[in-house]
Each structure stands twice: as C-alpha cells, then as structure tokens.
Picture 1 (tube, rainbow, N blue to C red):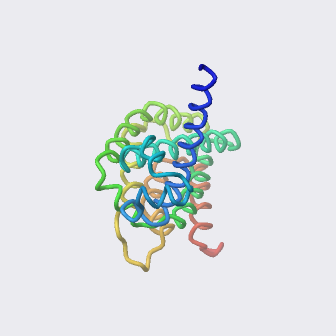
Picture 2 (cartoon, rainbow, N blue to C red; picture 1 turned 90 degrees about the vertical axis):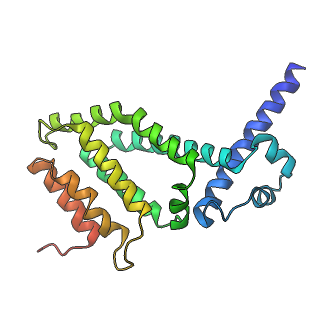
Picture 3 (cartoon, rainbow, N blue to C red; picture 1 turned 180 degrees about the vertical axis):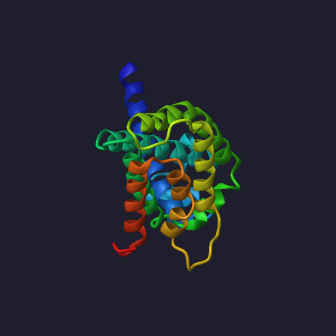
Length: 216
C-alpha cells in the first residue's frame, strides 16, 4: 500500500513538472488568455481529468509557473554571482540574459500579468521577501569598489525594481528597442550610484548593448 502511494506521488510530481514546463512555454508564446487548459492537456497527451486533478484553475497553474521561473532565476543568479568578479558585473550579466530572454516572450503575456491578482500579489510578496538579501548583496559592491558608500540601498532596490517592471509592462514606441529603453532608465539609475570603477563597467555594457562605436 505504501509503495502504491509513493508511486502515485512520483507520477503526480512528474505530471506537475511537465504541466508547468508546457504552460510556461505556452504562456510565453501566446499570452495567458491565449492558452486554455484543454490545449495544455492536448499538447501533453494528458487527459483533462488528470490535469484538473492537479490544477483546479488556470490561475493556480499560472502561480506555480511564476514560482518555478523564480526558482530557476535564483539558481541562475547564484551561478552568475559565483563566476563574477563583483556584484555589479554579476548584475550586468544577469541583465543581459533577461533582455535576451525578453525577445522570446510575447509582450501580451507581460501585459496580461497586470490583470491577474494572483500574479501581482506574488510579485509584491517576492519584492519584500528578497529585500534584505538584495540590500546585503548591493552593499557588497561598496567593499568591492563599484558602488559609492552612503547609499540607501533599500531605496535604490525599490526604485530599480519599479523601473524594471515598468519597462516590461509599458508600451513604448516601436522605434525603441528593449535594450535602448533599459540603457536609458535602469542602467542610468545604477550608474548614478557607482564609483569610477563601476562606471567603467556600466559604460562598457552600455556601448556593447547599444552598439556604440568605440570612439564615442
């Protein structure tokens, strides 16, 4: 009996992971409202009954997708930090990855997240949960010589977070790429708090991101 329960639990875990992977891909491609539970079950060759036994609603599935993506992002961040010379270098590497990733996500998905209460509550909770770690992480940059001392990094973090969210949730003119918007908002916010050493890193990133000629 115990073995049967364990087997069922393992199968459920496998099904749940497969559902989340498929849903993330579908949401990113077609947006949230453009994806139905029936489509997900069909793509996975899974019965709708099995799907609904694991997820009663699409909102529950969306929340687990956001949690799974957040967990994956944190693991990726740990790897990047371990391979970077300082916190600013790690931040810039992460920014590059996120901007590249954004080219493969339908803007409709980002826009629709704003209308889902479960998503907004999750993001708000995440911001608060990560605040202390983020502040401590940024403070390391002072000792590493990339951030100026005396900065209120809680304010710095909150403003930077809101700027980043605005970039991905606001419709800008098609004449501006996501890199151009980022480099003229979030990146300038960061640059204003850096030392000369930090500014060199930021300026090098900006030139590369915007393909600015070396003599500019």
